Length: 445
Image 1: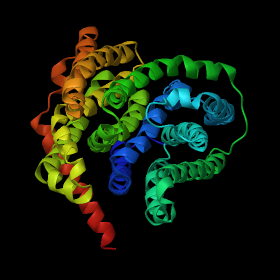
Image 2 (image 1 turned 60 degrees about the vertical axis):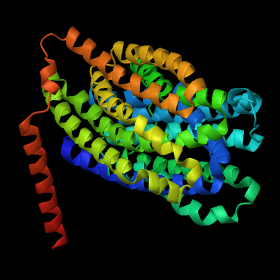
Image 3 (image 1 turned 180 degrees about the vertical axis):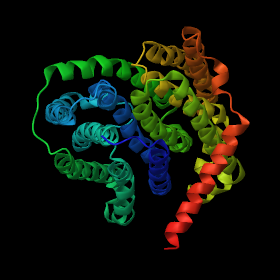
């Protein structure tokens, strides 16, 4: 595998994220505007179920794949052999579970999803899992161009197909058909990149039982950590649905979508960092890199927050309608949550690169319990604003818990290593100027 170029990889992931965010914004605006809060709540709930369910099937293997490639130098053909076997097995399992117990899993309060949609959700969960593993394999073998295109295609193609096809769907079936279109597209993308991986790896089937055991021994810790982070960020949605109904959920989910679009940037950078840190195995150097990444992430956070504060409310009223204006107020209450979640996600990635220590899942477990308590206290009285406040209290606490544990356990490292310095700003300025100079040079050719 070629040398990992951190700046190039972050540039590509940032570029893919910008494209994804723009496409996601257009798509979410379109669906919110033309589905309305009730149908949008039903639509968003399907993806909330996916975000919880696919990780239960994955058991953290998506993360341990990349760790094994960089840290253990595992054979990528053996890794992908396992991925193929598991995809086929989990597809039949998911279809069976949702066929017989789909209603029970999604709940029957107020709305019952059609059987076709339940089966489509089963396919989507398994395909999204395969999609994630393909992405991490491409990153692990340092095929950043393939990672870039694979990362942008699902959201971008969905936007391109949805905008014209939406008007061909029957009025009563627009929510269902929009979801079915999403499922069909991700299935096609997974198949196309399956054959690309086969060619890239010069694939032959290799079954390595010990490697699979190693994947799960590492992956289970990653699973506990990531699954609890997902629960920490999604349980308030489930509690709000139970206590407030689909209408409040539809409005609050718009604020959460804005937060998620910001946090996806942290997730994309985190993938690059996990790849780099797993190969580096040097805490001091890793913390120096992480400090510079914190600066980039904070600048991105504050630019997004300032933009939303300045023009968010009139834009929401114009694009989504006055029935969604409460989403802006909820977003303003989520500002501490944005900082805590993005920086916490990056520091959690740093912990993962140390072999997925136990505290990487103990910290979100503590935070999740606290959030459930706060959400149940605040939501009945304050509705979606109570959900936002519980997040803004818990996410910074999650980051603080991880910092206290790491620097308490690693006495040779100091918290001051993560404090921003003047030289970090100058280095960032120099990097940006060099990047623009290279871009101008290429455009001038």
